[in-house]
Length: 120
Image 1: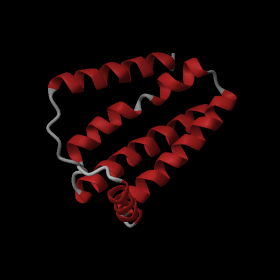
Image 2 (image 1 turned 180 degrees about the vertical axis):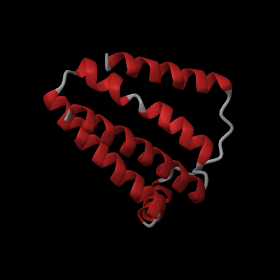
Image 3 (image 1 turned 30 degrees about the horizontal axis):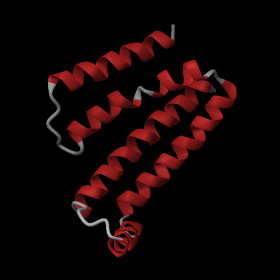
Image 4 (image 1 turned 60 degrees about the vertical axis):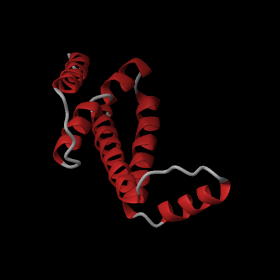
């Protein structure tokens, strides 16, 4: 059960981050932090299906993490769920078309190796 929750967390966290990044790129940069501009920003983001989808995916990930913490130790849960870093790096390259340098690939692979050590 705990590995199923880890899988849900990893997939939903990665999907949420990619959807939020894509939605915010479509929205454009934020340069005005005046209260009226922030209200317009929130109204605009409330209509952005990518941001709403990202928030929903992150909410599922959060509640799955709470469930995981109820049955597993924190020293297992947090490192295991960091596998999302590798998945997010792959999605950034493939879906968002980001230029991912070898140092980032190496870091993501090192994280994946650490997650693999948890399963031993």
